Image 1 (cartoon, rainbow, N blue to C red):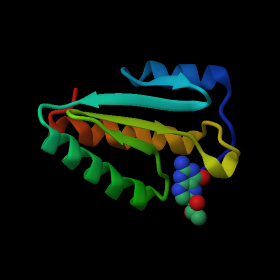
Image 2 (tube, helix red, strand yellow):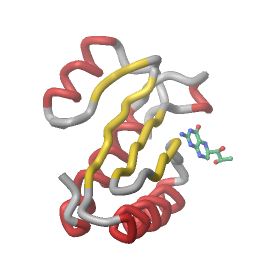
Image 3 (tube, protein in one colour):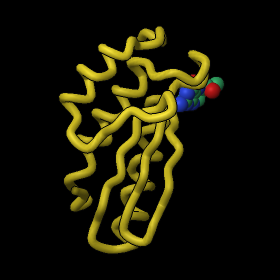
Length: 101
Ligand SMILES: C[C@H](O)[C@H](O)[C@H]1CNC2=NC(N)=NC(=O)C2=N1
């Protein structure tokens, strides 16, 4: 998968397809809200499995009933690449099963 930096326009175009995601400080990020702390913990665990599968890892912040995911591509110099959006799309696919909104 290409790890070239995406342009601002490419990022904006991709974010239009990912409601809830935002671009800030050279990272893309999203906060998921779930019903319970256990559900938030399970969501974190599931995300970690996918991150290891993709070999692409975000900063994950576990709150009482929230999970904040923030990611960019270290190997590309800490900028947003296709790999970040690939992770975002995988998490968007798995999140609903955890009751995430
Ligand atoms: C050696 C290992 O493949 C690299 O460090 C991987 C691990 N996870 C990663 N995660 C992220 N976000 N960016 C990377 O460049 C990256 N590289």
